[in-house]
Image (cartoon, rainbow, N blue to C red; front, side, top):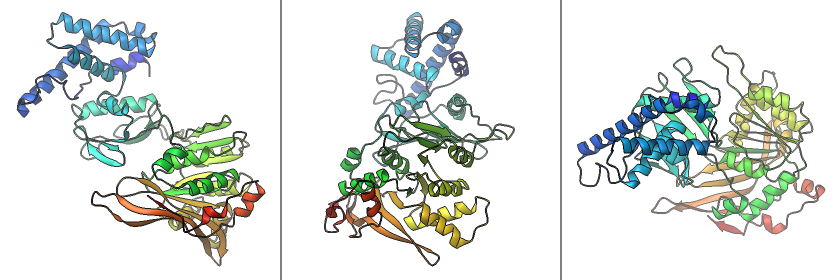
Length: 462
């Protein structure tokens, strides 16, 4: 979407952010006065917005850089305020300029949240309720939209930037912001009370091993093991519930892949931030309004196999592509990784089995499980605790089959010991004392781990 189209699209947009400090909503005013002040402030922004649309040469703005456009808008706002003799102090003027810029160039009321590095999730529950997640805990903000039409304009701006659509005939959409943040929106008639938006923030600087250790998400011994098994090209499945940090962990593990390997990533919405040079990023695409043009994960996995990858990294396994992924893992693309939704490592294998059966090939249960057991080497379980913290709960090795059952052995675990009065979950990490069978493979790759890594007596409080 061009700048001209963006500005015209916003020409009837009504903003509804909190009024600037020192306005009619100052301390001591009653709620009616506060509401009146808000409405007056919004009306002022609407008038300024419309005046800018009438005065500005949109074609001229189109040729300017984003920073130049911001400066041009700031000068116009200042000029209009002076001409109309609007009684505002310097702080209020600055706030007004920022709000107008956000409405015309950004996502309106959401812009302050998108610029807040402490916010990990933004959850819009209709126009009047906006929640954020900070440090694992949800909190209601004082940010609102003017009405559902205002919120719909913001949603349309988000999806139009990535060539997708949302309307009554297609009321759900996945998209991403320019910074990579993942967006899901659903509107009436599917959303009964009004439009809903969920934004999973994209970390500009991905978490490092040191960050995860400082957060006590896992231990140094676990980090050593994870690095070794990635470098030894073991196939890894990351399991966890919604918001458990699966993608964060996948991104971190992908950082251990040697820089001379050719890596293909496949995602619904590109989020991974691999730092290696030889990375090929593929992304799915939903069907168009005529139901055509869809590019599924399965199609991308199959195509990736023709691209001579050393490893395939699949953002999330959801369906029949699981079968193609197993084939890839079993046919020379060792060291591949994927995530899926499951609450335990055993549940992860059951879910994977169900998804393989969606691949359209009739296969006996035992043969299917043999495929899984031979393809997947390690299952890593992530979880979001009740206090909001994310932890790596278990690392388990798949050791083969016994009859029709896939055998697993746990190498590391997190044991809960209680909950503090403030809700903080207490527990500790420890090894189980089991030395994994894949240690022989590590040696073959010139890697070795000291026995102390697997010592169950070493506990790490978390």
